[in-house]
Length: 428
Ligand SMILES: Cc1ncc(COP(=O)(O)O)c(C=O)c1O
Image (cartoon, helix red, strand yellow):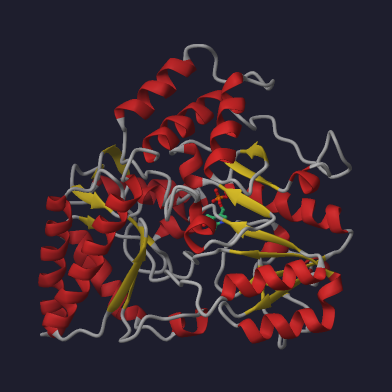
């Protein structure tokens, strides 16, 4: 019998390219039929065939307090009855600005947008407008949304022009984007020595979560800070994923490095579309209507979305929230690593706050190149076996995983037990 998931996927493919509204959802990396969900509560999800899962995707990060948290749902309902949108300022936006600038003090001023992509695209335009420079530096394996200037891969050397990584991006646009390897301090210093005065900004995921999980090593973030300060380039921390997740004040609080601009998304909307960018007041003064850098949005600061975000941010400020989340995440990863070791499967893992990475590799990778050497086939097998067992992991070996505050000890125990069985079968 064809499942409802399969039926929906077949029908969707005739009307929606690939059957999905964002490519990773199509399961192309792992193969098979994507799961269509109809309900979530806390750490659990239910699909269209009524199968239950423990969720480690969390809508790719936003669901840090779990699905359908009563306080978040109540805030949305209370706000929605007073209109879904005004396209004019609201007191909620001020409340959000006060809360975020308090939690992330490097953000002296903030502007709200509706996605992470909008946040990074706007921050880059602002950095270029502020410095009067065109070139930007990003790192291999980091994802900053799908704006043209950011869909770029490394050219043949540090000083060659970037190459578009997507059709439809003009080479002239990609030419301004330089790409270096994550954690390569010497390459960064070398690039700045040569063309530092032409670089408008450096944009980085302070913990990289879009090539699986890669953490900054050997003072990488400090090196970026030093070089940007020395050459007058704007340092942008893209905390769309790490914001409010690895610490209340994001990765910049965890590592003690202050960027000039920060971009936010995911948790700041609690599951509704909110993004934000902000930082130094003198830089933000270049933004319209105060300055010459244009940026706008019909639904920016949407009241219902902001209400969901505010309710979520209030919950993550609870005493011990992040310590508990980090401990639960660590326990889960340690359990998986232990289970793999017991079965003799080559596997490693790590976590930062409520984010985790697992690798079918003996040692934890520190760059995109090392990530690419992990055993992708083993991951794909693991993914499907875990899915069958009711554990929903990201459908790609190149994504970080997320734990929420709603994940109980029992959830984690069940996950580890499922993994033990899968690893044993893989080793057999
Ligand atoms: C670090 C980072 N920046 C930007 C984005 C883009 O955000 P959005 O998908 O909301 O446009 C993402 C999305 O995964 C991200 O992880």
